[in-house]
Image (cartoon, rainbow over all chains, first blue to last red; front, top):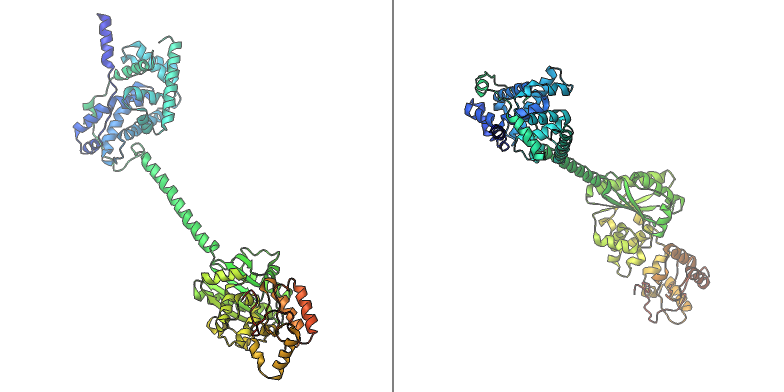
Length: 195
Length: 378
């Protein structure tokens, strides 16, 4: 019964990738301080933005800070948004710039050490140890772009070409980094007997 | 663990992360930005970038094409065709900047003038200097042979006129410096395909053909083929003889050019009809007698020179001069079959005329009327 509950709880976290279909009109409404529109944007994009920030910062608290700052920036500049057909690209740009700024301000350009990740209590919210190890392995083994691509692919319903377009890289590069990243991750997890 | 399992694991880990409180976020005071900063600056859309790149490439191509076309029109497209006729006939094709695109020898004499010289992209006036000096050094121009016809073909008559004037001055200067007083004829005309084709066919310049056409229009007995081998000096003499008004096509810097033209003796033989010799003056009588004496089989007084065998007009002219030293010749008939070699022609003239009056060298026509045309012209 306990085992069944754990499995059921895990399945409740596992959902279909988020459908991120943003209507650019949302920004017009947000510019007019329409909180419903802002909430809609928040609910659609929050986890994706968090995953993206986390892939850069490798720290849950810093990622949450950046997510919060991202939404505040959106509210402050929604009236300046020019509809170019890629609203998520703009949000990712804000998130990336804020993450880099965050890293600079904390003088943390250097990679976070493995021990730091493994002892990071900020990931204690992850119920399943295996999931936690996989996430930590992703931070340890993958380079920044591989991690961004794999996390975005895992958390959102972005297609490969959409990720490539959003990150501003060629599709072939995106695909090769995605497959190479997964391969590296699998190999590492097998070595660690996680899999 | 399969690929999807790893992604599922990552997804679960992310989904379990605590979210930020939306109400806190919504209630935070925000100052609206007046302009994008480096954080919110929108990425330039890839499509726009590609479009811009395409636009830049297209614009570059367009500019290159425009510049190339402009350069081509300015420097590589023929603008003027200038012909210098003495007897060497040389055609010069120039661009808008009066640079030489092509120098073409229209006859054998001209080939000697331009042999071994490179004129491409040279200045027109320098080229004319070189050509004139070459004509002087090779004896085509001297104090006696001092008539040059400058013909300019240009779409713009004004440009053609000014170019012909400048060239005339240039030639005059060149020749004056060599103590030769030039007599310059100028022609300006637009392109005429018919004239150009005739010029090409007879190996002379369009200007010369125009001059020849004027002569032929007054006397149909001449043919282009015959006249095209003559120097300008002799053509002028014929036009004087035939009272052809060349002013319609030619501008004479010196009105005495035509008046002062001395008719070479051989010209009489080319166009004078035998019947004219029938008058009972002493000279014509003598000539008639002389012709009869020499013309064994008949009384033909015509000059018949096979054009196929006349390859060098000057040589023919010389030969006639040699054979007819007093200029009072009778009728020279040379049959096509008999003239296989110019040397034999010259010899035959010498032999038959003995440096006095040339008679009929060989038998030809049965009729008495004679002809001023060559056999081929017939």
